[in-house]
Length: 168
Image 1 (cartoon, helix red, strand yellow):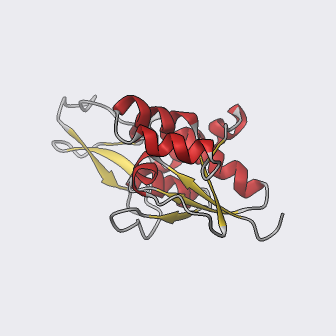
Image 2: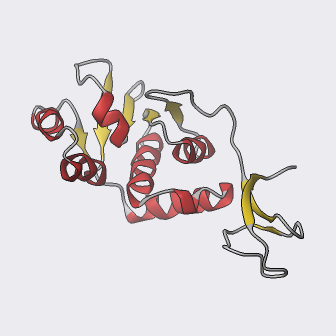
């Protein structure tokens, strides 16, 4: 299956993409389709794309989802990723492991950042993509204490905490 190209589409991509036959296979997950259908955004268009196989529906394995969660935890993006985002990344990861050249099509920066961490290609729909992998930490605005996981308030002084890029 060398040379196979796969574009993994998130909800924004499903709403924006032209579903024409081309050199890449277009795939997504049920969770992204549900967001379109239940949101009433463009259900007919996406239904047609699925029924004609212009876009294929696939389901990632639980092991792939766990792998993606760990990668997102390392970058600090896990709290920002939805169940849909994790499923899309897991599907993309499985396709890459299966030998495909994979591009995740999304405008979501946390999704893009984690995709880069997983060695996946990214393509923005309506805005620029991230250029480098970032790791995030949480810093107290009062005392400066740094946390690797999100907290609402500093455990030392009770100050407000902000999400910042981890410095080397």
